Length: 418
Image 1 (cartoon, rainbow, N blue to C red):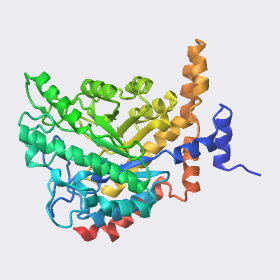
Image 2 (cartoon, one colour):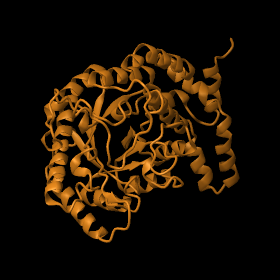
Image 3 (cartoon, one colour):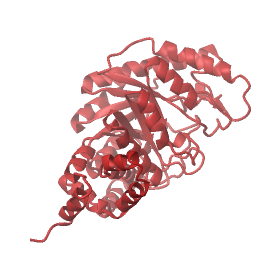
Image 4 (spheres, helix red, strand yellow):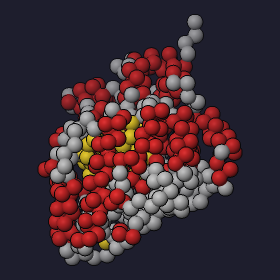
């Protein structure tokens, strides 16, 4: 009896000590937190005509069909969820609350403003993660929020952050899974800054006040996100990598590493082992930088694969929270979502199909040639057949059929939004 393509692939990987069935089972249960902001170009729903402005974030393009309401965004996300395998979560920004047509300023948001999303998440069987929104607001126009030297501005954003933590705990309690709250601020300057110490001292004091209230870990967990540079903060970022690494370590907070927040030539994967050696948890935002902090749609690049591989090699892959962070308004947004999610799932599966123990043993024994040759030989193994088998198990379309489904959705749904 002729073997199927998957059976031949399984045998090829078995010869190098890799169980493909276990690899598929493992990748299927690794949650990917899918970000709400790709669906509407980081606009949010605070006002009927809400749109992204300032804060070192920029979307480009005006492709037809962006979500204009919570209902449309939920419909789009449901389409995305139907086209990607594995375990999914939703990553929600504070500006995406259901404010019932009324303006609610950021320092006044309440848990009830997110009940619509909680009910939707229960229907979809997914967890929700959360982010404070420290941009696209008049009180962020000078480039500073939690590090502002204006006490009134700073107090406003401290209150916003406190409310976000309360909301995250509420979400986690309602859904029965910890809500990961990421705190990222755009604070910094375009040109030479002389009082770097002063701004960072203020940020530390703001964070200390924000984190005074303790919440149960089973409901929410805090992460603080680093950044090297950004649009409008090319010369100085208050919340640098060194700042937040020290703050997280000393205050028992999770560090968030965004692939787009470092120099494009830097290998972010090299940071993972150092962080997870000392910390039990890590939040990763997966994006594809091309030039200068650009969050392009994730594809299966070497850097993306390296991050997934390093997660596996640390042995702590199940302790890492994975979220996506990209936005492209120049192409079909549903397609951007699906391509990005599936690309990182491929990266994770690639990592899970490596004979890590064998490679480590060869390295330990000083058998450098065999280590390198074995690693290189992996490139010709039939990874695609294993991936396609996973899709079949979850009754999901292959990559080419997905394109047809997304084009069909554009014709039937997205084009009506012109």
